[in-house]
Amino acid sequence: MDFIHALRSALPSSTLSVDSEILSSHAHDTALGQDYLPASVVIFPSSDAEVTIILEISNRFSIPIVPRGAGTGMTGGCNVVGPCIVLSFVRMNRILEIDLANRIAVVEPGVITGDLQELARSHGLYYPPDPASSDRCTIGGNVAENAGGPSAFKYGVTRQYVTGLSGFYVDGTPFHLGGKLYKNVAGYDLLSLMVGQEGTLSVITKIYLRLIPYPRFRATFRASFSNYDQAIAALQAACTSSVYPAAAEFMDRTCVDAVRLHLGIEVPDGDAFVLFQLDGDQSECDVLRDVCLTHGAHDIEIALSDEDQDAFWKIRRSVSESLTAMSIAKRSHDIVVPPDQIGPYLRRAKALGKQEGVTVLGYGHLGDGNIHVNILQTGPAPILESLTEKLLRLAVDMGGSITGEHGIGLTKKKYLNLMFSDRDIACMKAIKEAFDPKGLLNPGKIF
Ligand code: 2HG
Ligand code: ZN
Image (cartoon, rainbow, N blue to C red; front, side, top):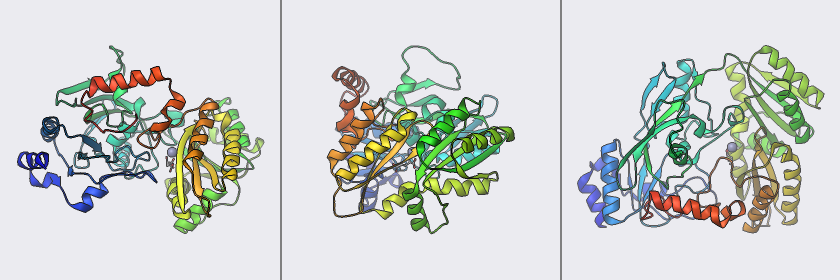
């Protein structure tokens, strides 16, 4: 193919791969049941100069680009849908600066989120966004998807931490938006638009991130309740007693049993578990414990050391892979409802699953109403796409959203109209057209 020949002539050979295993392993993310084609070529640039060359060749041959990080996404956001150049940022993985005076990190897109968190912590600073895959996902991918995680409840999602971005428009023109800035309200907010764009508007090569002081005290509570309505009431009571947990995560018996079977580790007894992470002080711990007890919690365990807290979190962070391992087929959708609707949503969602002979369960982010509603096939009845539609529609009907942190990608694009009017979608398409008139950036995603 001519464009591969042009890439070979313009770039060092170590930058480019057409190995069939690489082409297929770099053609998708972790979305289940989503088709993809092998990439035509995968490029691993290590500098802006190489990215510029790739964009020039993409334009010259009208060949699309699919930018990607570690591929831990969950909606097919970096899946290949036709001939294209896959642009993997894993080699652009330098933490360029931790600016202590301004409390800003400047990083390349391929930096692993957990590595930045660790380095920030060694300086007494904290980068809060913490997707379950933080030990392997990249900051670039987090920016593309506007990733969240448990700490989003108190601290917000990736967008709240991005103070600046540099990179290139699709025709190779460089852009620089924001910087080491805590306040910036000039013009339309292009910087925010670039976060959560799913690789469809521009190519990002440098990211400025706000860091905050690392909490002086941290404790993780594991409380079991008889149902989530009790847990939600406890959380509400804590917040009105001036104790605002950093995270409030929920999972049920099926989730913890799946982790026990998958990882072979011990898990607690009980039916409805909540992990509260508290970034505060010892006195807040006492308030939270009392509030949980008043609202029906039994078996409250409190971990204070990093090691004990990590053991609690390990179970929660392993739920997704463990449910995949225990089922014949699985679909997971990260819907959002107002937090007080979690209990009612789950009851109605489970009833819908029962009608179709599959298991529906939910776990995830109690504090912000972001439920990972899972459909599991454990018997002969298959998972029908129509059930996905019913579960997403139910969330929207209850005042919610079809995604809280995983994005639209391929898996949700046919449901965009559950949330947006034709006019809304026309505005979004006009934005895409303004940034990428030839449709070269991550084709087939979002719309
Ligand atoms: C989590 O919170 C992740 O564990 C993954 O966002 C959830 O598999 C999923 O849908
Ligand atoms: Zn999640």
